[in-house]
Image (cartoon, rainbow, N blue to C red; front, side, top):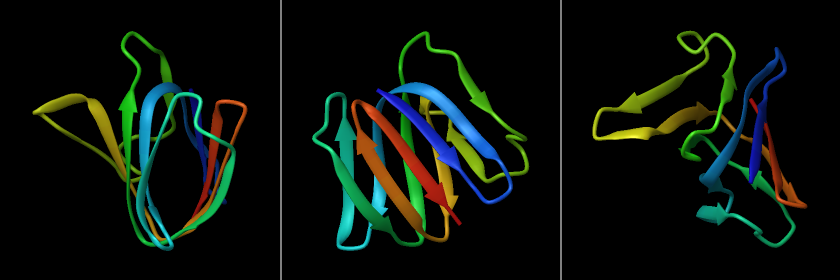
Length: 98
């Protein structure tokens, strides 16, 4: 599936991903490929992004926008948000993040 993370300043991330886990208003949840359409509010927390193997991604100002990685999970990125909204439709997820 395709994931895009948009902040008021810029589009900070675009890539094909295998999964994304988000801090939903009623608890954390994960979306995989071909997930049912959904719109959800997000709370403060971390977005966990499992990158698709071999996919190219676009990360703007990686060192300045809050992305982090862990050496034990080289294909996983974490992005901290203060809140926002998520829409998943037609295998494309868009996160509008604060």
